[in-house]
Image (cartoon, rainbow, N blue to C red; front, side):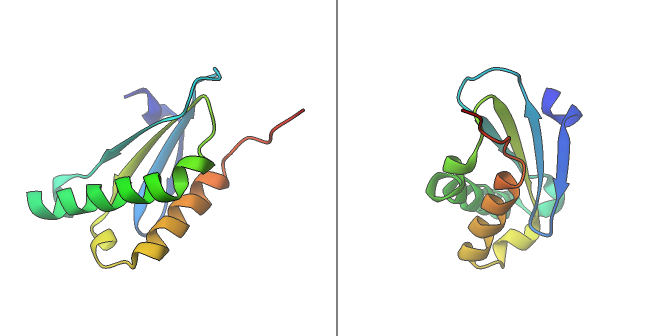
Length: 101
């Protein structure tokens, strides 16, 4: 996966990998959860929580021309949803290129 060559931001709840593609197309994101995070039911719950956090809050913070991959960790299951979406948004915003013009 090409985005693995990009920047990595590690956190308690997830690993965020991002790669600037060099175009102005809409941002793309993917979610992955390894088997270390739990059984299939737990991994799907982690994916659903991450997808909803991106939909509700973080999608507006994503920069055009950037690919994002979120690698979920088991701690997401116990984290309050507000904390999850705030951390995700903060990490994405912290790496958004400055707009000119």
